[in-house]
Image 1: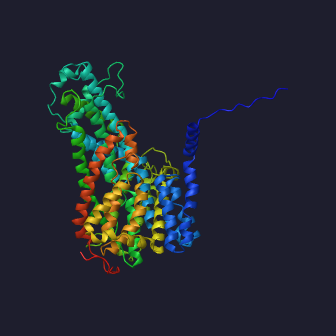
Image 2: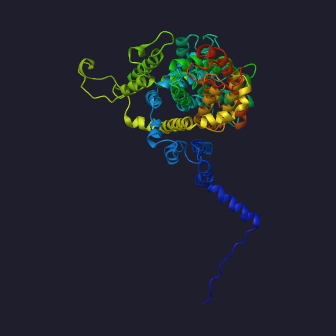
Image 3: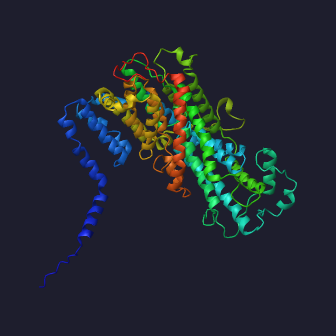
Length: 608
């Protein structure tokens, strides 16, 4: 019997090398997770100091966070394993960092945000705001930016961006439809409206902007059905016919959503996770010396809300200059009045689809207002607040947040039909609550809670082991600089780093070090912690920097180069505004450049 011959495939050395490289590429994350802990082992083994053992965990988590070789929340769980094994902290002490008052504050705020999204209240606010603005591009852009900015102060900027993008797409499709008709059918640049539009248009007002007389314009639009009807074979989503000028308009509208969401997140303590992480880590540093950081909801707004307002207005002007040009007119050849009417009608039509404000929306809005008022009045500077009626230290922002969150599971989502609320002849019926646990379980970003807990555990270990102080002692270069210059340089550094890694990971790694660095310079720890925590949200250059950037990039209108060019200017402008805030009202309110009483004075610091 003839033996079967084995077939060997000859591969050139270059081909074999390429195959090996591809194999390594396929398992690179696994190799990093397996071998990095082994490569770093000499650090805690050769040096018996607690600082070196803590540094092992810090470096390991930093690399895992930056490379995202395993999910970020999973990396945040590593302190529970690493620090007890190496004797840095007890397991019970590490685990205690994962549920703190700040965690409960975030849970309460996110629960309300889920209720707002569930009843579509955020969409009603956004569309109503758009109907109040003119529809010429510069005002339409502002109409997109303000509701995005305002909603991002209170709810997730991811949800806000995801809600606004379809609205922007609908408006752009309407503008594309107008431009197509004006170019292909009306050589003189006039939009062909419905047959009865010609006779009725002469009797209408010559106003160019929708919204000057809301009821009159809305009635006119309904009667005449002012909308650019699609020509045969026309697809509003087809971008192949877009001119360069119209494409720039699309890019500007999309970027304004992402930038507004990022800027809005810095305005309140509930706006984004880095804000809460900064509060927690500031409390850790101050509590070490038996002091209070003073960072609460109102104090955060005193510093950051003016920064957010200035940045959003400067972003509006920057994006106008970059994408709308000098004229800031509609990028189509249609008459301004006709184009405005068609776009205005589209916005009103989307708003009218929501119908009348539902019972659930009204109740959620009341809960939202009550929670904001509770935040603002708990501790009013120089006056006091309702928190003073309770023993000192017993009441925090988390109390209000959780109380409102629990209430959302109790209040009905529809008008009840029992007792005095039941109409004559109406049968009694049970009504579901505003929120169910399944809804919250599905919408709650549990990974963010783990990230905050992991960051708190890492900061606590760095502080107790002395690692933060050791790192600060190595940063002697900053001792010869003015603290204001140091703050500016570090803000730029944080803004640059957060372009390539998450802002949560950035502030988690930087803030413990910066707080101790400020103490070594004999200034308030908030002098460096406040601006750097805010700067972590100034990520405008790359799609991977923040979720809003990624969502906007996914629309296909924006290229990486577009975002990078616009983002460079935004980064510089926003960091300069932040420096202005630090050296003016921030210093006046928090006394940032003076070491608070109770902290040890570093005699080796250079006197400035």
